[in-house]
Image 1 (tube, helix red, strand yellow):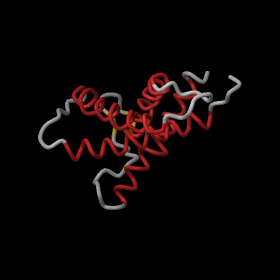
Image 2 (cartoon, helix red, strand yellow):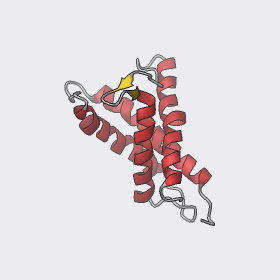
Image 3 (cartoon, rainbow, N blue to C red):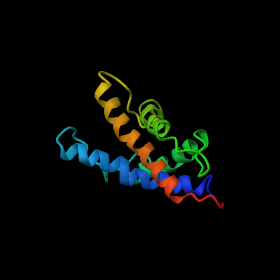
Image 4 (cartoon, one colour):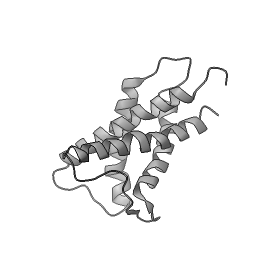
Length: 139
């Protein structure tokens, strides 16, 4: 259960409490236009964007837990989780998910990549926070 379900739930919660909250805080500070918790429909399935993002984040959290070998017996990989979220999720979003949706990487990508890295890195850290909080040594 700790290898799939707990990371899945942790990724979902981290998306809501860390990723979307980071976007909302950056918007409140006047640094970015996206507000976080976007209810715009996510093409092609029509779910609100923040729910679709949370579902995909859940899948990524299972992969992150497996790659970083997250377990209660091992030291928590805080920096690798931060880097995994920032690099892997941002790259997947820009170079895989967006082209599937018809959005191609063009022009100056630095602001988009920086925003993606910041919010996704916080997701990685948050996912690890939830995983460590939920995992027990007995399972």
